[in-house]
Image (cartoon, rainbow over the protein chains, first blue to last red):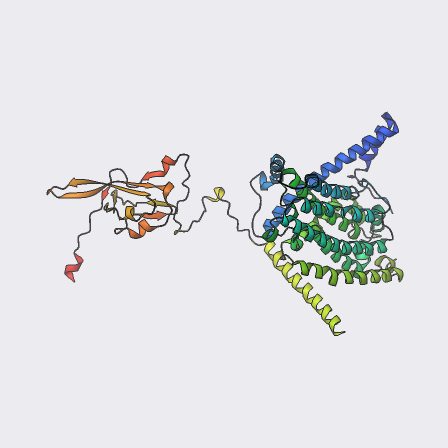
Amino acid sequence: MTNYSQPLEFSALNKWIDTTLNEYLPGFWAVFIELVLVGIALLAAYAIIAMILIYVERKITAFFQARIGPNRVGKYGIFQSVADVIKILLKEIIPLNRRDKFLFYTAPFFMIAASMMTFGAIPFGKNMQAVDFNIGIFYVIAVSSLGIIGVLLAGWSSNNKYSMIGAMRSGAQFVSYELSAGFALMTMVILSGTMQFSQIIETQSTCWNIFNGHISSLIAFVIYLISGHAETNRGPFDLPEAESELTAGYHTEYSGLSFGFFYLAEYLNMFIIASIAATVFLGGWMPFQVSGWDGFNQVMWYIPSYVWFFGKVGFLIFLSLWIRWSFPRLRIDQLLNLEWKYLLPINLVNILIMVGLVLSGLTLTDLFK
Amino acid sequence: MRSFSQYIKGLLIGVQSLLGGLSVTWKELWTKKITRQYPENRDTLFVSDRFRAELVMPHDENNEHACTACGICQMNCPNGTIQVISKISETEDGKKKKELDRYVYDLGMCTFCNLCVISCPSNAIKFTNNFENATFTRAKLVQQLNKEGSKLRAKKPVTTTKEE
């Protein structure tokens, strides 16, 4: 890969922090401080992204319904989510009678820990990934599935039949759709030949995976978006929360900060699904490049990698919101029908097609070598 | 084979209808927003004429109203919102005449049922759509509707019937 000038990257800053720390401190403490810094940066990003997402969602939702949306707190209501956060921090955590106390207070932490651990493996930009495992995709699938334990515990420990029904529905939904999401990602692993996020992005430098595997990639992309959307319990798949039947599903009995954790994790899961889709299908932080057009590529590289990443993620989140406000809620049998009768068989056939494409050299990069 | 072709057909019809739904919401995203932002749009605010917000007694340019102090509105009011206080005065030829002294209306008690306006025999009162009636004390909601120094409008002389 030719070297393009990248004026706005964080690489220099990272390197500077690393060298200065190593200069003044013994190796162990330098690493320790770096870990703490990365942790703080991730936690801050976690909270800030959630707040931005809440604001953006309320605004876009309003536009879909011909309303203006939040517009009183600050210009265009940009401080609305700050006000919401202050409110939720000040609220009382109401103790319930005869709930399972330990599990009741642990459940939100399962949710938040699962999405936080996934968050660490996401490449936000060039040199902006906390952990880069060689089995990155496998790790993400495994860790993000932990969240469902939090949902089930919340439903069980609340001692409330609505919470329990909501949690059971969520469990059934999550287990079903996790399968499709996993298979869709597996299709792309076949195409890129690696599970490591940094290498997946590297292979997409001149041709994003969604173009590279054309038919098969497109099908996998759609399936991943549908099943990822279903995993976040939103949109037409929000029957674990179904207001009209279950009040609020598994988090009915939560209030104050512990409800805030569920709320935060829900929005962050949406972000995580979108960012995995962006990384695996749309080239992650890699700018749009065409091999051979050096001038064009240089212009694309002037846009910093994190802007590319957040732009792609924002596009996918918009798609998710669009679907959310277009379709009515599915019944539980329709939901399971969609997964087991449509998505899963199509997915399995799709994997075979992808294997055929890769083995017979019909991917775009192979065709135009 | 037949069931397989139906499976594919059902799938395609499903995708087509979903895309149709998405296109509807896409158009809706770009439509004009219908939210009206109240305190800012006070100049262009439109409130329907039929909206009942406040009872008034219209006075003409001579400071005359049409209320004969008959008290029918007071009797018809379901929750005692209206109090018609009348006084007896004497005309030049020694006749005693009932006259309106004070017409007291308590906005805080009113349910805006419109029974007083319907039952008024001389169309002396009506509801307006001026809805900005918030005050800091309840006492300010009690209003006197007839203006200071106003009097009953004289009846028009009935002349038209003779000529016909």
